[in-house]
Length: 536
Length: 95
Image (cartoon, rainbow over all chains, first blue to last red; front, side, top):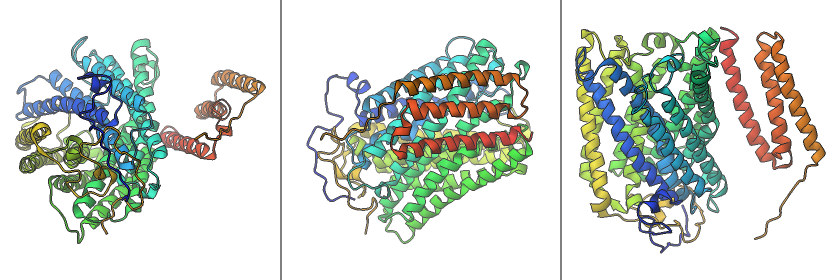
């Protein structure tokens, strides 16, 4: 990608001691790499908690009737699981961790455009997370609305709603600040010679994502603020009893929350676009098509929110408009899939753990995407709405898409981040167990949804019992896989073999510098002369 | 490394005119709620709010005197917002 990288002999970012010592050298660091890791560690802790909640819910569902918790506890668990996973992990996940760490490295910059704002974003994230999670521990009991806070229930429930909503509102500022930082960084700080069409695909994905973060997040912020005003001042925005419209809430919520799905999935697609050419040892097929489809997904993704509301009582005109738009957004997603598969055609593939994660991503994301087409069809949606089918589809897209890409990215960039290599054998075993558990957990839920099992119920009739046993067993298997994966990664950060600067023979700029990277990345800003995936 | 700076100083008189225009439009948007415009009530409020935002962006935020690129970016955002509002009203107008 470049001919002129001069190695930087500064201490690496993990060893560097600045103004502060110990933990303060981390929580007050403005280095984009340390901030990326701060997000990573925060999210790993939160993810472990939310995953355990998910497991406990599946154990509850292993048999009809009360198994280990009552209905109200179950309602609180799925709410906390959803809020934590969506607002604290999946939405900020890839941009905050890998965007922060690798965006400057991949575009040849020394840091992001506004390092202090970047640190502030993490602090706001921690503040929002603390307030949102505090709702569980004091006041009138944990919220039970689900992560969507649907009106009018969200302001009638006696549970502790305000901290949860306020926390989500504050988290929005972190998201906007991060998005703004990345947009400016990409516009202003690309290395000389890195034209838009020479920029790697992960930064492109981060760019599309950042625009969604900046433009869509304020809408949910205002919406959540309206809930607070409605609960505290009795202003009738959404409550019919006060002259409000509950469907307006759904519109406003999904105007943000559907683009938020693309905040989750676009960076995931960017990660896959990095992993595949590296291990295929081949230039990516259709670079420009992937770039255009990234921007197309970001744009069209704004206009499909209504497919979450097909049974809410919207007008017929709105229903078929949203249905058509939903089918349209599948086109750029499919373009990406075809390009990735075409890249693998006649490639000299080096099968390594990150590549296996990318392959598993393609498999599960296809299932998630195609089941989305089923839900995008008006007639099928009426039957499947609010059933376990939706939960399966959602997890195949969000966990199967973003989750697999997150772990793929972690295994891909791990040697660069920590300067050490994980145990590849254990990493592959962990993936195999996780992948088997994942499919055993979620595939039966498609079937359960089709035969009519509603979601968000702690109890069910006897005919749903068999598939629920399989699904609950899958959850245990999946968590076992996660334990293997995370243990291997945590252990290897200190005890793994020393990694080379470019263990995967990657071509993008981050592989041209030492592992772990020096404090300011590049001794001299590199000059880019080639395409990002130049394997010719 | 000194870069050429393009500064544009707006006259105080212009700012005062814009302020008066903004205040007038604020009073109009309050007054207009007393008229029964049916489905156009929201449109009227949005048009007035749109003009007010445009004035702030162009004059107070100096978009008028800045590079055309920024104007294109802002126009794209307005277009996006317009599309979102239009699609939302496909529900409200035909319900």
